[in-house]
Length: 551
Image (cartoon, rainbow, N blue to C red; front, side, top):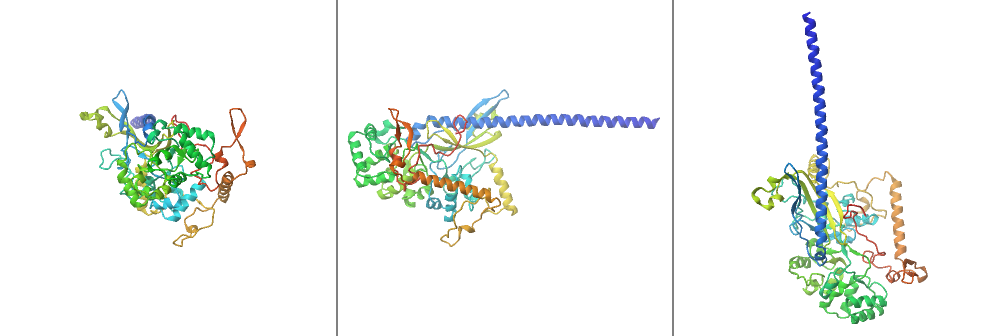
């Protein structure tokens, strides 16, 4: 009897234990699901905060667009609070510093070398890669333009150190000695992330040099066309009848303007005074494209980028960096001050003018968001405590805001919250010996279909690392598409007889179809592709619009 009672008691205890385990498991699973849902909610809240910060920066840059068109630099709010909930937590958005020689919270993208338009010599002059690798970069963009600097990691020979270097510091600790998110200054080894871009779009509008301030923001007058009464009237509206007649005589004499250097050459030929160069270059252009791509903003470019521009030596680059802060608002709208101050000769300026500008309409920002207690952010009554308060649910986004058009847009957007963690993992991988320092983070691809060329050192580019062609059909289809695009481009650029030229789809006031613009009829096949676009299209890189939609 006692044995039966003991058995029953043991069974009851086992049942109770099992019930307790089941109940505990259910409670833990419910709690885990609740925590997971809370984590998702917090992440969504952080993303909403980050996107609100991007839109806030975009709004501030849009309000300052007139000043930016005249060559000014933006002034952005460093930190702000978007909400305070019932628990006293506040949503904080703040901008991280990006460079010691830049605007504290924004970095000019136009002050860098555009990888989609720079020549092999210019890329090599940055001092990051050798000539064969620079040629590989140019060959890669011929297949498809780079959408970001990070895409260089797919080019054979380009390593993560060449792209990022040691310049990124996304320290979790907001009170660290090194600025959070900073990109190191000019004393650091050159890297593509600091010196290169794919977002350099200078709007083809008047900046307001001299007496042209009243015309700021209006389209420049395209001289890469035949002379016509309509062009004469347009010139007279900006200048006067005498200038219109003079330009007409020059154009009718057979002088052609296909690049800005042609305008400078003509001014030198006709002994135009330097004082007039600024207004001439600000009001006239050689393309009817909405944006001039690949221009370098000499007011924000580092010395390495300036020295890579044709016509600008290392000594001239040093002088530009040391003197540009002294330039008055009167001289700032154009780059003619380079000649007026004796930094460049007229001949050197003629070489450089096709590659330079004096304003930046694309700015890179790094936005840090999170939540903190209102008391901790306002402790001590100092306003700058908001910029130093420790954040929970922290997230960091990097964006490039483009205000080249009247409607601002986000040209580039990336979540870089885990950048520091990924760098730590990569460093650990390097230490383990599983990864070579010369290896890139991304797989390379074959960027060439042409025969290997011998370099000055005797190394054939065919010996450079290449992806194993395990799927030749894909490679062949890519080559076929590239060949077809090349053929179509050559057909568009080839000179045509009048009977071969198509008529445009636009109609004149009488409703009759009119012929293609004279700029297309007279375009020389030898014109530089980047300086004389073949169609009036928005060729800017980037997809995001201000409303969040895609282009």
